[in-house]
Image 1 (tube, rainbow, N blue to C red):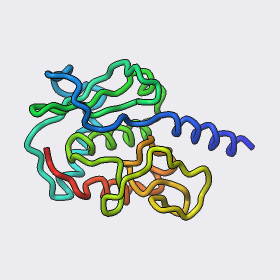
Image 2 (tube, helix red, strand yellow; image 1 turned 30 degrees about the vertical axis):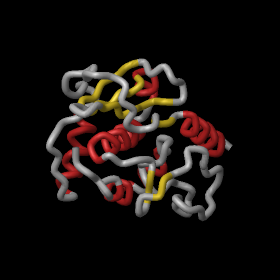
Image 3 (cartoon, one colour; image 1 turned 90 degrees about the horizontal axis):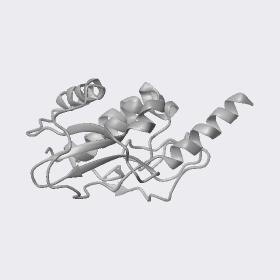
Image 4 (cartoon, helix red, strand yellow; image 1 turned 180 degrees about the vertical axis):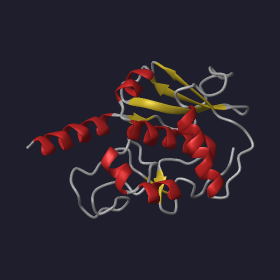
Length: 179
């Protein structure tokens, strides 16, 4: 019963916490200088994985924490022609496990560095309203109900990130157009 309750609570939280539509030009200059200390290990790990996948980036993305005032958004990639940066909601970040922090930041880094949308496979976009309520074979999802990609519009569950780590960390560099 505890396991079922934990799964249900985790699923509901995951459904509420999403990523903003990517690439909204909202500011003329970046808010941050560099990468916040707390995010550095996640960014370095993501960049190392990119290198292992043969991808080189020409610019850097800044990362910082703020109070995102749209309750359903916990991370977003902002950009202009000259920069890209990631805003992470500081309140949610403090409550996340290390695994969930990794999933969130990998998702946002893939938006900002690679220009990826909320898509999977050969570029098919996820519907922001499509959420698996229980394991079924559905397009865009593994048999266990986990999304096929970290680019799913909602933060993937810890169990999905653990179970599909190899697939996720390879797939997030598909169709990467380096910034």
